[in-house]
Length: 99
Image (tube, rainbow, N blue to C red; front, side):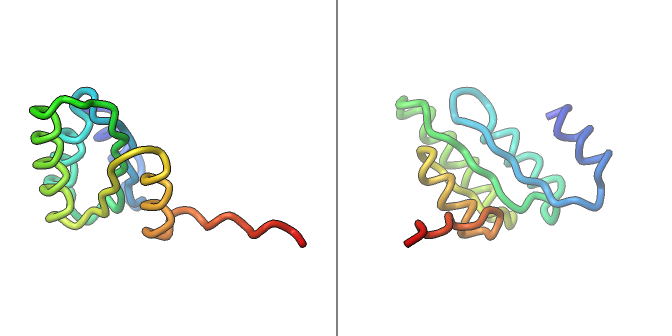
């Protein structure tokens, strides 16, 4: 949380993209950042690594909280995060193969 706050303060004009996983506290920390600065966080990507039902419930609550505050939230494997980034317009689709 402290590192994100420091970066946010150094670049007050920039939107924030947060990427992490659900192994520890990233989803809850990110939801707190969105609560505090709802118009600054544009996208949150959380890679699913935990398979524990209790953890999944806490992550779902944090994801809902962040989405309610206006952040686009993607959750799952690397493919789901990539699709979320594309849908949010943060990365381009790959170029089709040359003929």
